[in-house]
Image 1: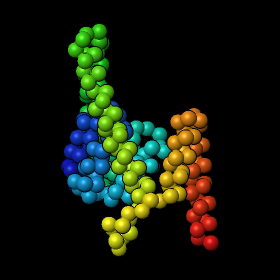
Image 2 (image 1 turned 60 degrees about the horizontal axis):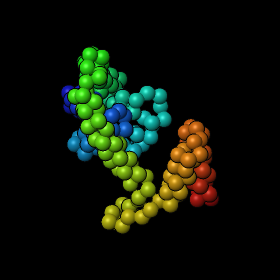
Image 3 (image 1 turned 120 degrees about the horizontal axis):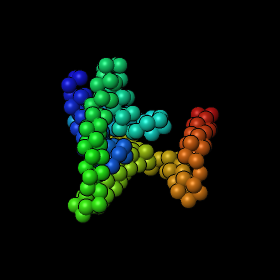
Image 4 (image 1 turned 180 degrees about the horizontal axis):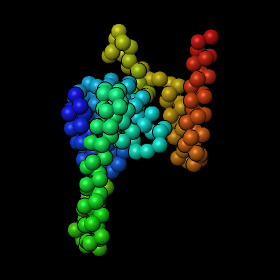
Length: 188
């Protein structure tokens, strides 16, 4: 299991070009789809926790999954595997960039990678949005409905973050308070 954990997060670390958000589809592919270490709901919770804690999402995710599967040794193995490719690749790229930064080939490679990174981020965002907004009945999985509270909170948070430029921590706390208040109203 430690070997699979190491190889999985080594791949995630090596191929998540564009940072943490670009790593989300790769993490989902390994952790949810390939090995079944987490369900999609657990993966969504993982991303939420990884986003709220300091540090890169991919590294936080590796630590969380490693800790869950193998305790502290699992966390160390997964985290090390996740950062190892970046450590090597960034060291080599820093050397190459310093040497060839004004060259046409370097500028062409950087321009080529931009749309791929945007596609990876969009893919991850759509998968998480689907999980957050759509619910299905356990007895009848084909009946999918919209979670209107989550949809409303999403739209409000998007407006507050994108157009009003509010602090993300304040927006998260307010949305959490509204969600808790709605849960209390539903219970009573």
